Amino acid sequence: MNYLTLFRALAPEVILLLAAFVALTFDLLLQHSHELQQRMRIAGVFAIVGLLGAIVLLIQQAPVTLLGGTLVVNQLTVIFKIVVVALTVLTVIISIEYPVGRHVGEYFATVLFGAIGMMLLVSAEELITVFVALELTSLSLYILTAFHKGALRSQEAAVKYFMFGAISSAFLLFGMSYLYGVTGSTNLREIAVAIQATGSTPLLVVALLFILVGFGFKVAVVPFHLWAPDAYEGAPTPVTAFIATGSKVASFFVLTKFVMLSFAGMPGSAFWKHLTPGWTMLLALMAVASMVLGNLAAIVQHNVKRMLAYSSIAHAGYIFVGLLAASVTGATSVFFYVIVYALTNLGAFGVVTALSERVGGDDLEHFDGMAKRAPFLSLLMLIFILSLAGVPPLGGFFGKFYLFMAAVERDSVNFGLLWLVIIGIAMSAVSLYYYLILLKHMYVHKARNEERLKTPVYLNLTLAAVAIAVIYLGLNPQPLLALLKNFVAQL
Image (cartoon, rainbow, N blue to C red; front, side):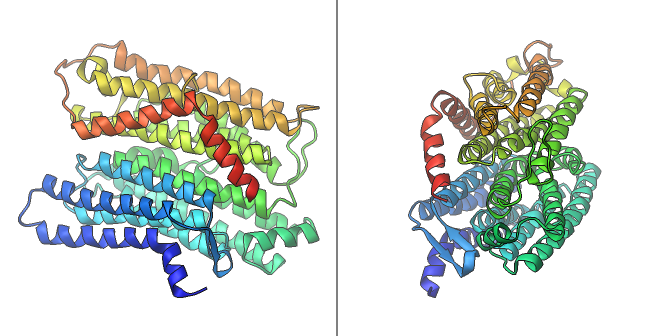
C-alpha cells in the first residue's frame, strides 16, 4: 500500500470534506451581504456539487482492502456508499427551503460530516474503525437534532438522543473489547475464523449481547427504541429524514456484516419450539417486539413525524426477519429492503417538510384537505405511504415479500421461521390502518383554509423522482436484486 492508493480509496470522503469547508467559508463571507434564503441556496449548491462529485468518484473506484480491513472498497460497499450519498443529496435539497436558523454553513457542513461517517461505516471491516465512524455519524446527528435552538422540543429531543446514544456507544465498545479479548483480532473476518475454531464461550456470548444492544439503539428496535419518537418529532424535519434513512442504511449494513460474518459460528436457533441461545434467537425476540409495539403504538399518534417514528421501529422488526434467514438470500433481501425503505421514507419526510412549514405544523389535523391544497404532493405522499404499508405493486411490497420469503426458505421443510412471518404479515395489516388515517386526513377531511399551497418546482421534481424510483423498484425489482445477490455471494 502507498499513500496514493489510500487517497484514491478515500477520495469520495475527501471531496465531501472539502465541500463542507467550502460551504462554511462562503457562508461566513456572505452572511452580512446576503439574505438568509440566498445563503441557504448557495451553501446547498456547494454541498450538492460535492456530493455529486463523490458519486462520480465512487463509480470509478476499484476494489481494494487497506490497513487490515480498516477501509474496504468492493462492489457492494460502493453501491451502499452511492445510496448514502444519494440520500444526503435528497436531504440537502429538501433542507434548502427549510428554516434551519442563521447558522447555514454549519448546518450543511454537519450534514456532510454525517455522510462521511456513514460512508466510512459502510467501508469498515475493523472494530475500531466501525466505532469511530459510528461516533462521527452519531455526533453529527446529535448536533443536527438540536439545530432549532429556540425550540424547547428540539433541545429535549437532542438531549434524549445524545444520552441514549452515549449509553449505546458504551455498550457497543464494551462488547467490542470482549470480542477482541477473546479472539485476539479487530478484523471482522479474522474474528469469524477465531469463533469458528473456538465455538461459543461465555465471554463471546457477553460480547454478542452487548454488541446487539449497541446496534439495537442505533437502528431503534424494541426495547432500545425510546429515543426515536422524541428525536423524530423534535428534530428539524429534513434532519429527521436523514436520521431515518442514511443512518439506518449504514447501521443495518454493518450490523448484517457483524451477525452474518463475524458471529456466523454462533447463530443459535429461532425455529419454533427449538429456540437456542445465539444471535438469531435474540434478533427474533427483538423483531417480534418491534413489529408489535411499533405498529400498535403508531395507531394512537396524532403527530405525523411521531407516527412515522413508530413505523420505523416496526420496519426495523421486518428487516430483522430477513436477517434471521442467515443466508445469501436473506442478506440480499435485507439490503434490497433497506434501500427501498430509505427512499420511501425520505420521500414521505420530504413531503412532510414541504407541507408542514406552509401550514404551521405537522400534526394530522394540519394535513386536512391537503389533496385540494397541494394535489401533486398529496399524490406523491399517497405513493410513499402505500409503499410503506406494503401495497403492491410498489417497492415496499416486494421488499417485504423477499424478506418473508427468505425467512420461509431458511427451513422449508419444517417452516421453523413461519411464526415470525405470520406475525410480520399480521402487523403489516395493522399498519395499513394508521397509514390510511393519514391519507383520510389528506383526501377526505375538509381543510379550514382551501388556499392552494405553492412549493418550489425543484422540490416537486426531486420528490417525484423518488416516487418514480419506488414505483420502478416495485415493478422491476429483479435487476437490483440480482446485482445485490451477486455481490453478497462473492463476499
